[in-house]
Length: 281
Image 1 (tube, one colour):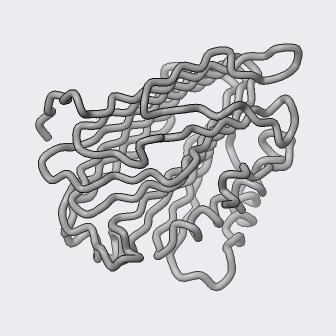
Image 2: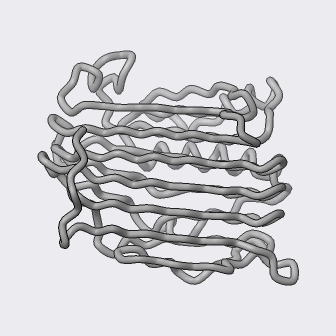
């Protein structure tokens, strides 16, 4: 897709967060934001060792020409949970695209849990997202991504537009996992059994930096929020875990991902997971 030059009305938003230790407490030692981003004050619902941060997109959504960049760095032994205040909306822009880049750099023995709320692609949206995670030895990243194609509650389908997503996770110069996905509005993939299968929501949950045993996979596969329509799958990565969802509900996808997170958290971090309060609204 041809790159267009940003106009004066396009958002070129940016967030830079750096976490460090101060007397046993994980704190943001650098916080830089450029509109439309804001960062709420740090929260500690679990303990001072785990810092919770909420990112706010004050414009309410992205339009064609918007470019957003998020950079998060954890110093050694830091623990942070980063989420967003609300779902991200990508409005229809037939002739322009929007782009978000996310760069996560985790130092030795640190842990970042990256849990943004869902992304809603309006019909005719053109959106690309790239996520790169760089892990030092002993570092661990847990994250998810939930995308809805079209405002299905209003009967809207994703008939036109493009979506591209790429996730790269590196450790010590070695590529551990690359996940490339793409979808064109109105294409047969929307209804193909090997694509979305007629569902409007897809999601991925990944844990990278720690290998799981087969018996752990068996327990995780038994977790599912009741008699809920949709498809799910769990597989092992080279040094981690990947879970996929496709179904009718962003809320159900997140409910399942939270169940997985709460089950895994005591194993990889030694602490019970505390759900961020912004998810409870």
